[in-house]
Image 1 (tube, rainbow, N blue to C red):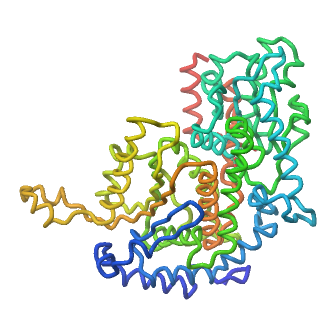
Image 2: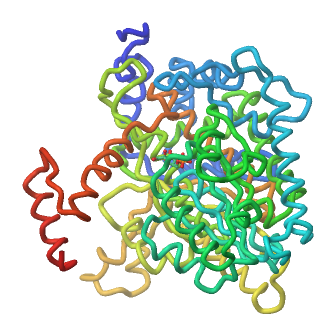
Length: 549
Ligand code: F6P
């Protein structure tokens, strides 16, 4: 029993029942599961909003799903969900509410934090963003010299970069093609250099995105960007026309020299990795326009409502979260691949890496004790079909079980025409072929029947039983993007709730930040850093030698 009155997860009867069930299912083969149930291909599916979700190619039976739902009930996933939507402070280690769902709540909703309805403030910021984005897009907001803004550079890192950068790529075909929009995150000066080297400062707007406005990478890049601007425009007043801030920290924004009127606010109850539908999405809103941005928020809301109200049997985030638990905790899977069959989703998995790995990469439970069960997986992947010619070999025939999500669209984006449009069927033929091959493989007899020499038969045989979820939508729209992101947000929530970890803090990133600050003077000035280990000391000495210091 825990201090919080909960039985340790892996000592609950529901966990034990799943472990036993896993042994019973040890020999289950997808070929047999499909043969036994001709309706499986349509029965193990869900339709939520614009998403068609097929989970038939998983190593599960009705009994597996029932037992997983019992685990969710025993760990009160829906209780924690309701507490989150109500604005309770479920981020226990930071004593904060977790209310990214309020960012897409309708204008007339009432969601209270400490007795105050936060929805009017959310819409006030959205309105301010819409007004500003409209003025940049129309040319009414000009740079210091009166020239129109043609370039937008977002400077931020982690949640203040990955979300808008990902969404900008996803929705590229909805963007104003006359605007150049770039994202700078890395403190490596090469990032800012490459992003600005061909831009005209008089036509460039910098958006400094930082929840805390203390993140060293962002403040360093923002300071360099200001110097770059002032080197060309030579007037401090130019900063007000070329710099805006997205933050929760007004004081630090003013200290940096950005007028608080040019600051777009969000709040401590929005986690960085859950923030791109807040003010952090300003660069995206400028690119796609306020109406499209609001369509995206509608997509998020659709899944929020589904997650809040759908019964366990048909609740998509619950199902996807539980399937991940089935593999991570009962099949020893260490990673989870997300494989979008859309070039526009090229940054989607990178975005999900932060969402999932920063949320659920924890070995301490909410009660402060170390977990003795696996928590978040390694999330990885790149768009198909490229991955097929790189690492799919290991997914098909390697020794590791890698559950994967395949995401695809029936229609190519509207901009494509002619031959490029026609290529879409080939893309999607690969999409369907891969999940088929992964699930059902190819038996030795099938290989032999092709006349393959006996010594090659084992090499050409595919065992199959590689589990996948297929998520299919008609087309990639702003709303569909919102639906996909909310689906994953809530999936991550479900898993954190079952594992009894705080999915909304990120203490694990702090140590590296502190050590970087301590080591920097050793690099620049050769300063003695007390307590530096022998390896790092030697590396620093080698670095200084290479730099001629
Ligand atoms: O260091 C990790 C982190 O705090 C992330 O959680 C966050 O998204 C990122 O840094 C950037 O933080 P900020 O928006 O405060 O600059």
